[in-house]
Length: 507
Image (cartoon, rainbow, N blue to C red; front, side, top):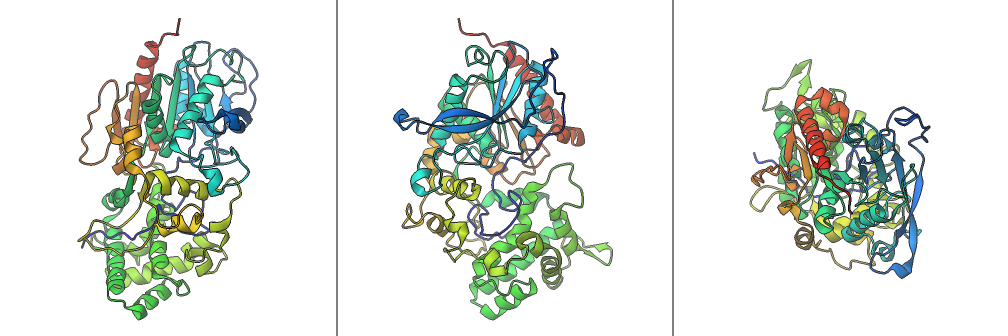
């Protein structure tokens, strides 16, 4: 039986699901940080790491006459000594509140700062959180949400900002070495920035960096299939193949019976029901090495595969038990986790374009901002496998039209080839850029560690891969739990030490 995946646009089905948990979006794991010393190395009292600073960022780097907007950032200089690096990261496609942990040595950012006597900065991406050029997210405003504008934001900040720490007006590139760090989309942005604007950032660290834009990204599910419990994989395949067969045969009665087994009989469209089944697979992306059996993904697999205290063999329990057990899990546990008190069609349906999910243009709406980038430049539609392999065919690009009817009269084709040509994609070749990836990352196949790419690791552009999940290497604790991740982190620190020893200020 071939592995079957159902078409859905970047996991962005309209549902009241926990942010960044089920959507399959390339999110950086959130880390709010714990208490740390409130004094610097020389005893100076430091402000809390939650202190918000503001930078006057250009609205349009191609037209400075449009003025500036307030871009939020956070900073810590606990380990800083004059001559040390400035370490910059954006969390990417999300509200940056709650990512202050990336300022500390709970992450690779802080480990580098601690080793090299550097300062750390988190800056919010334009059109996410409360760093918005305009007070709305209409198509007209979002026209200024592009990869190039985001790249230029990072460069303009580094070359222009007077930082709030002592001596912060004299640490611009050329005066001090800057290191750009990112994970997931922001990891790709790290690579794209160093390719597009060489010479600004002395070194870079790109974790799970989704550098290759691609319209149809069915390989998202490959690492999940390879590394999830095989009995669970077998039974999931059986249920999806069963639904696929009924869809092909136009067996509406059989589909309705299956929907009712999951408590989703009121979901009108089979495509929305099929998409809902994928939510359990998207839980994989939230896993990290220190997550145990209590994680939602493993609760799901245990519900399917443990019967009367006995676990199924590699082939699972079979179709009938899988339907019953998976449906029971949705009825007793998962529906409330996904939808709360909402009815099924309101929660899971994507065809009613009058719902606020499609019409809300207020700021701090990451779904809307991210979908704009997906529809225009990066794609990553998590679609079915190539022709000839079983799949359910869904017109998924319609969600771009649903969200942005003023911009798209027809489903758009993202300019992925242009994105890869302009910013390097997997063909990136740039000095002092460290790539870190995880074998179990569902985004692995659009990174430089993709199967079959065989991109060589070199001293000037090292590529390391641990056994981790998505961006696992960014978190210090994961290196303690998993020795393969520790190897990645130790190598990064070694390279950063070597590269920073080569840096010299401009005359």
